[in-house]
Amino acid sequence: MATVKGNCIVAQSGGPTAVINASACGVIQTALKHPETFTGTYGALNGILGVLNEELFDLGKEDPATIEGLKQTPAAGLGSCRYKLKDLTKDRTDYERIVEVFKAHNIRYFFYCGGNDSMDTADKVSRLAGEMNYELVAIGVPKTIDNDLAETDHCPGYGSTVKYLAAAIMEAGKDTDALYTTDTCTIVEVMGRNAGWIAAGTGLAHRDEQDAPHLIYLPEIPFSVDRFVKDVAETVKRNGGCVIVAGEGIRDEKGCFLAETGGAFGKDSFGHSQLGGAGEVLRAIVEQEVGIKARTNKLGTCQRSAMHFASLTDRDEAYLCGQAAVEAALAGKSLKMVTLIRGGSGIRGGSGTDDYSCTTGLADLSQVANGEKKVPRDFINEAGNHITQAMRDYVMPLVQGEVPVQIGSDGLPVYVRLRRNVLARRTAGRFAKS
Image (cartoon, rainbow, N blue to C red):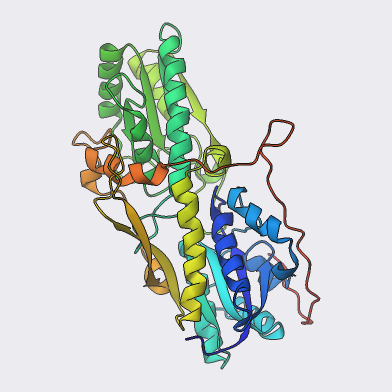
């Protein structure tokens, strides 16, 4: 059982999702039920930056209805960030500042919702706190639409993104079908830098040969212009038109990003090359080499925050992860990330049978931080331009059901906003973002 009594804090990091707030809700509601261990439940404004800047707020003072409303509100209600902490072996300043703030507010439990880098941050902060003789429990809550976190079957946020995109591509396919005489080819670029889970998931929309998407290209398969031109030409000849889904991170045979912008956009805060334009590159190839009209669609951030068509399964599992994080801390666990474990055959489908189940487990934060899960080769067809039944069976249970979103009198969704009752500062230092 938990060996220390003190305050807990929850923070969110990285790109928001439709269901990351459901995870935060799971943490908050569960923590508030255990005042014997968690004397206070706090939030950090904009992830780890909020800790560094000592911008904290008391979640216990929020209206319970607002906390409950997080379950149907997209994006990051606590505020998120993309801040890369320095290498702990080279510069301990950031980490020591975090521990200083935690000590000042008697924060003994740190729940961090995020991806690989967030798990790495939680792991290193907790370990450094131990070296400084300050007991700090750190539990990670998985989050990423990319579905590429190691040690977990799937990630909260992925199912909702795929559900929205697959439906959008079905509709784009109908549009393309109606205008085959003018707009013969439609290219949809989706997120996914190193792993093609999002692109692959849209394959659910392809129920028969005529259905979009007709071709899918993933970062896992080296991209060949010659093969692509042949694929498109054959598809147009067979169907009269072609709808293509491309992951933003597709690479050529040399490993170079098709959409590498290099000097135009440089690197992001994590040192990753900024991508943007894989769809435009493919459009140019289609028009120049195949000789047909093509147009591109890029849904951008809409694909990760579409609560109006979010997966109920995804939302419920996101909440479960937040709940399980607190339960793990209460059980005396630390330096762990909550994982999702698939049970049953994993298939929820047309026969009416439903034996998909999902439970939670725990993985070491260090293992998650240093791992990456890509689409298995047997989930991709032999030609490397679409998915197999194995991929369909994997993703189908994750997109089931719709989140019941409240609709206002104006006909639009009603989303909540936290009041963020700010805590008084207790340290003299202040972090200045560089």
